[in-house]
Length: 176
Image (spheres, rainbow, N blue to C red):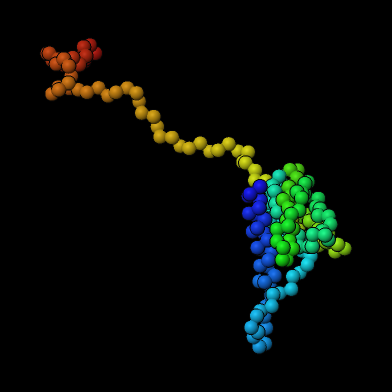
């Protein structure tokens, strides 16, 4: 649960920073002493991550007053935990949701209702990485050495018995 809370806080910070990054101030206007925060785009829905695989859990964040939060649903999500307040100002609610194990790859709408307004964001489900059906290529192995140890010649001689007499080359019975 601690892992999800830290992910939830990351999403809250990201959602809080997104409107600030998108807000551009007119540089020709005279500067004020206290900057005014950008207007919050209520309601909103955010996912973390927005690209997942079947069977994975994601964080769903909804910017909506607690009393106004209605239904959050998607064809890709088979269960959504209870929404909890993760930020008081602006109010952001968050919950962990599970992507169904048999969900096919594609884009799925995640809809959140806040009072009478429905906001939508896309969730991309990607295919599970598949293992190769081919067997792995065998690695070349060095040739095995013979288990027979080489014979050492006798010290100082090549043969153990020295022949005696003339060499025997054959009988010569066919001489003319």
